[in-house]
Length: 335
Image (tube, rainbow, N blue to C red; front, side, top):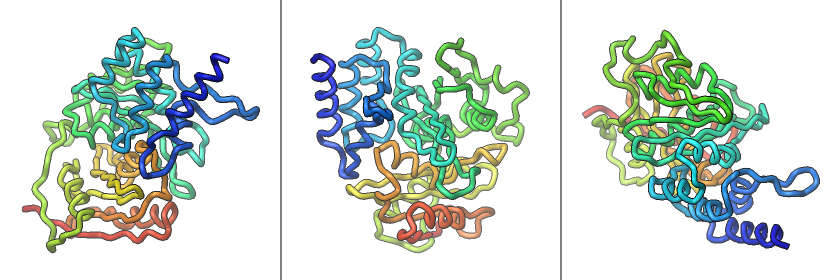
């Protein structure tokens, strides 16, 4: 009887007041899991009932996009009697269930801790029918979410498995001294520097700083526009990190429920781990509980005659995941 009451209460909380994206079932699965083959619910978090109720309030919020602010982190840590590192591990199961792995069926969760004390969920994303090179790794998703929320830096990241070399290289762009702490359940925490010895990063290409803190580049539209989505994409482009190519770009997605999701291009010294603005915008959409079907419009703002263009890859991905949506490309110039 007690278990049934708890399940009913959880279900009710997970299905009340969900955002206009209309993804009630998905939000419920993030907290409590998909039923197994016998129809029984699978627990996805080791948090107590009180903590799950508190977390559910954020997952229900129409403004949620992966960030758990410091005040809530402190509340959760107090309720659980855990330090923040152990809380990050406890949240991994919920982060993992935002994953979109249609190719590998392998789910990865990550939780990054910003210098502000806020936590950022992340998960792996694979684009159906598209190049594996366009996949987003869980660590990249969590770090890009911290980036899009304007974090000054990241002090730690918890992951469901040890980060691959691709992710270590991406993390290196966010931590020039390799001082990000890597937390994997059941293992002693390690600094990135110990997992990536003799690293190659921004300093090797003459850069004094990495991707964090986020900086702004003075860009203006080549032609004036009153379109709000275009200006959202311009704002994302202004906050892009492109020190190697100088090709600043940003994407804005207009989704059902009158929400806008932005993505700023993030380059990497090794080039391949770079994240396109569309990848980052999709991560924000998914963390808000959205799906490809929620995409209504997409605007890409990039620099005219830049060394690289995001238009072709953005069009290619949209043709697969949102074939009815036509990409609008708008050009900008440096002031």
